[in-house]
Length: 166
Image (cartoon, rainbow, N blue to C red; front, top):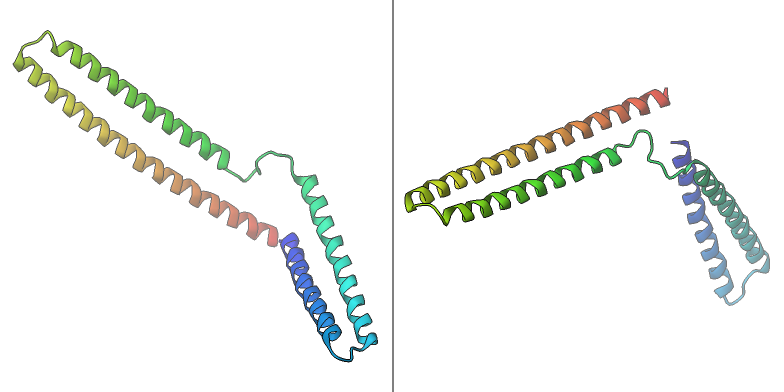
């Protein structure tokens, strides 16, 4: 939070710097500009600019020191991404298995009677419906677990924030 407060101060300094520059330009645009006023405004502008440059350089230096390329210890993005990829792989494997079962069924239907073929088609349709229901349930469960994980992270984050402020 301290760094954010410092960045807020830098932002206010930038606004002040731009305001001072505007005043200096307005003074220069007058028919009879005051050299003393222009010098004062230019000095204020240059001082503000130096302060902004120094502050931003310090922040960049700090960020380069703490940035290691590793996820923050409180971050669960990598774990969520791994979970999401696992669900995609699982869905792909199920799709592939279903396709292979369909091909197997087509091959088997060539050498069976019409009644057997009808029974096999009904069985395949039932299996597909069951798979779709399972996928929907798993998808709902995974979204529920992601929601639970997100709320746990938020509560952990708020606990950490409360602990760090006290």
